[in-house]
Image 1 (tube, rainbow, N blue to C red):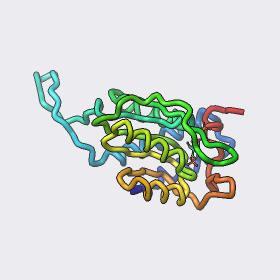
Image 2: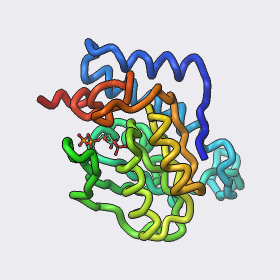
Image 3: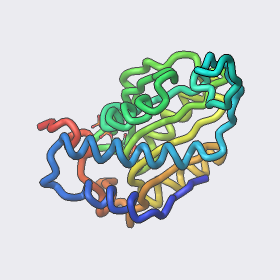
Image 4: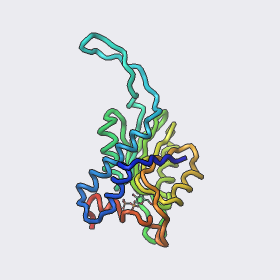
Length: 206
Ligand code: PRP
């Protein structure tokens, strides 16, 4: 299932990313701003728990999100600014990292690094700016499920209709929060109009 919040602020921020003169700093900053909006949308119905605090008026019970049950997982490398945005907000969550790279010729994704711990009982917030074929996201979801993730929420900036359809067919229990759905994939499986290589643009990789 996917959720596509149609908000002018969100759309405007995504479209700003399409400007190729944007500096890497502003590119990363804009990715973070978009992520915070997607995170806000994705947590609308999150369960709250009572916590006891010593407040200035003595001990009080207040409702909070149990951040220790949340794991943030990013798909290297373009997702790193998004990861930063989520853990700035949910600073008690735990983190994991997956290195997944698409082969330039076959367009198939492959895993080269897995630094994700046990996900049992965890709600995983999975972040990656781009969903092209959906192969990288499928790989990531499969790994998280094998590690016991109870629930998976995916935050993504730009997707192709094909990529969204693939995830929805294969993983109907995963909710994708997507800022913008572009027109299509081209013959090289790049998103059109897209952004270019988000990882290169975020980190000025040559
Ligand atoms: C990009 C992007 C996604 C993936 C999307 O990463 O950040 O992870 O491609 O493509 P897919 O949906 O067809 O799998 P890339 O493989 O370029 O890795 P990089 O950021 O390390 O360059």
